[in-house]
Image (cartoon, rainbow, N blue to C red; front, side, top):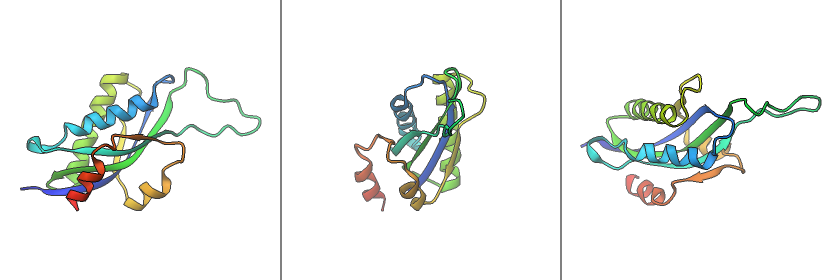
Length: 143
């Protein structure tokens, strides 16, 4: 039986200029739910946010038709053979889901494991929560 894993994740991708951030978060959460090997449950809990470039005095803001850079910091709770394999699986699944929903945005989403501390320290105050309904229960059970 595979071990239970809690994997801190960072996901970044370009999105169309008028994409809804909450919808992007729900897409990530839905995608993670179907990752569990052999029908086991996988849950992604975290936050999504825009990583727009700052506009300094004298600079023009981004054009209305320019892609926007979005990010997600959170934890994936699942079971699997190891972190590397789980991250590879979630990378493939998120890449396919983002392409299906938003089309070709020029590059595949970046998905990688990070330190747990980075999730806590680097989450912006303006971030929107995603799929936290059962995450605390599953994190406790996995530990």
